[in-house]
Length: 100
Image 1: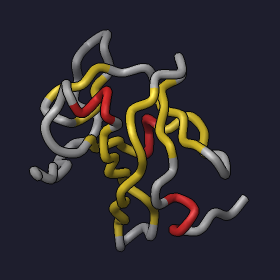
Image 2 (image 1 turned 90 degrees about the horizontal axis):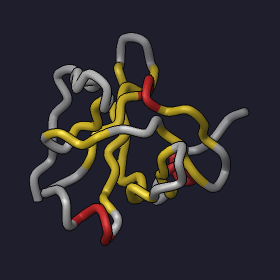
Image 3 (image 1 turned 180 degrees about the vertical axis):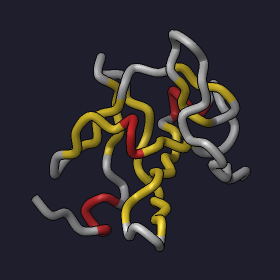
């Protein structure tokens, strides 16, 4: 299935367990492989109280993308980059975080 950048922009992002993280604000592409590296997510009002700035989600953390939403692994938040709760390893290596 093919999806356009207009469909991704503003798409709801939630975890496997149904917690809403926010909406896709933009995404970053690797020009060599021409593939999406990571998604920049503007936190929902609930999540915004916990973090400062946007969340960076690597493509490896995405479980499913439909026309209506993106589902990601159940994760913890560390320095605005989503990390696996079990081992706290940084998933989005070298991610540039936007501060607002």
